[in-house]
Amino acid sequence: MTIRVWDYLAEYENEHDDIIDAVEKVFRSGNLMLGASVRGFEEEFAAWHGIPHCVGVDNGTNAIKLGLQAMGIGPGDEVITVSNTAAPTVVAIDGVGAKPVFVDVREEDFLMDTTQVEAAITDKTRCLLPVHLYGQCVDMRPLRELAAKHNLLVMEDCAQAHGARQNGKLAGTMSDAAAFSFYPTKVLGAYGDGGATITANKDIARRLARLRYYGMDNHWGEQKRYYVVETPGHNSRLDEVHAEILRRKLTRLDKYIEDRRAIAQRYVEALSDTEIKLPRTAENNEHVYYIYVVRHPRRDEILERLKSYDIELNISYPWPVHTMTGFAHLGYEEGSLPVTEKLAKEIFSLPMYPSLSFDLQDKIISALREVLNTL
Ligand SMILES: *Cc1c(COP(=O)(O)O)cnc(C)c1O
Image 1 (spheres, rainbow, N blue to C red):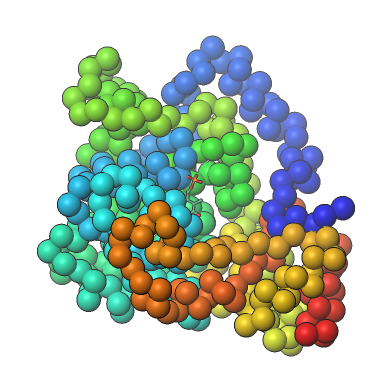
Image 2: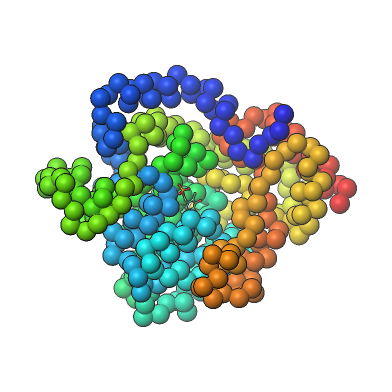
């Protein structure tokens, strides 16, 4: 049996009755779209963060895209982010017609190097978009200071950082708006696509709610004018079924994170004496280990030799976004983001998900140690 880098089947076994009950509840509710479950999840997810507003959407990419649009960002605007991210971060910026501008990342923790941001600001810059990559937060204080100084908006890409904290503050509560994905692999994952944007700004939330519903009012009781589009939007609704499943799983989010941390701790205990560089938690951060990314200069040889062990490993991500043909028009040469490019050649991810058993983890650890000994 292959050990997968991510797997939900053991978790589904444990939670089967609750998940099926959630599905059954929605199917019998008589209201399959934008009903009590979406609204309930939005309220609970907002409250979990201590933030007043949450708008559920169909995926994380659109949580970023509609969030940017709701903040008034569009053609002609520049958004500063990183190339060392999942491509959807950049696809979303591109999707509103804005231009993504990249800064490099820090070698120690793969996160946005905030010292490079000010030099990237131009008179077209409207927004800073840090990505809380792999489960920990970009240093937000310098970004907030730059945003105040240059009158910019800040959006956090929290697709990999549900429940992560910095200086005690939750990911998603340190900016104007924050986007989450509930893609199944994420720290809080649905059984299909889902996403949400949270914000303390009522106007952003209201515009977002319209944008996900063709541009028409919904869920905003005081101004019900259904069937009237003022600004054309999208169809980007979160499904009732996924919202109800997410409500159930939200009550277990702390436990999922605790389990991920225990697995990470075990990797540390078993692999610290090897040549593999293990993830480092940035200062004042509490990591949630969405992906367990390690590093070795002979990565490709290690992966090749591990093939015979039936262990699935992943590279997140093998090609930095600025080197992808789809973003060639942005004009980044190879070598322009040296740390990002170097990391892409050395990183790989070990299996990580809350229900990964000790037995399976032992197999992964001993396979890896064996392979390292033969290098
Ligand atoms: C997963 C992810 C997204 C996109 O989320 P989807 O739900 O797959 O659209 C965006 N940004 C980052 C950093 C992600 O990991």
